[in-house]
Amino acid sequence: GQNIDQPTEMTATEGAIVQINCTYQTSGFNGLFWYQQHAGEAPTFLSYNVLDGLEEKGRFSSFLSRSKGYSYLLLKELQMKDSASYLCAVRARNAGNMLTFGGGTRLMVKP
Amino acid sequence: DGGITQSPKYLFRKEGQNVTLSCEQNLNHDAMYWYRQDPGQGLRLIYYSQIVNDFQKGDIAEGYSVSREKKESFPLTVTSAQKNPTAFYLCASSPRGAGGRETQYFGPGTRLLVL
Image 1 (cartoon, rainbow over the protein chains, first blue to last red):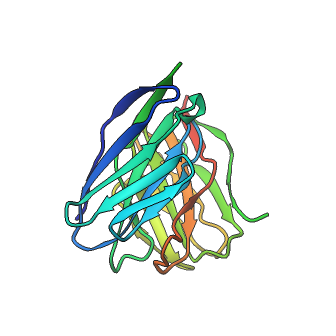
Image 2 (cartoon, chains in turn green, yellow):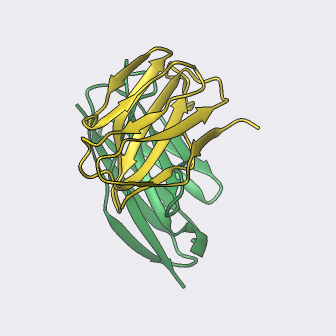
């Protein structure tokens, strides 16, 4: 089975940097995904990691350590529109594109 | 313009009534999924289908049913056996095989409310 943990809520200030952590346990790892979800809307794909290291994409970066079962999503130069939930999801080997989702981290950006 | 559509956006259910949520995709994806999301919670898998005419139960299938007669369509029925159906329902699709960053793409969701 799989188990994914991430903090329930975080608060940060506009213009700052915030790091959202995700730890996971899986019997066979085949990729980790981060999604952004604004209230009442569908999740949208943000990033993908399958090898160790940092993937950078504009203001957003995602890091993976497979040996530690750990990932983080880094958001720089925070904007008010970044207030949303961030979902960590893991894909297991031999499971096609099935994903197991964490509970999500609700980020509130304050002026 | 490829994507996933869900209808209706809001749905009201009366006591003892079955209701059906629509999900259609034109991404040519083999696999489709239904999730339930409760306020402040993550996504829980209800049913999934990897190919036409085949589907499997997810973690919380009780009180729900699905069909997959066409590749493009994966309707979800919330039956009267589901005692607490109020939630946000999300449909997703993906290629069947795990192909790198190809992953699940989501429809806009249907919010189901009980009268």
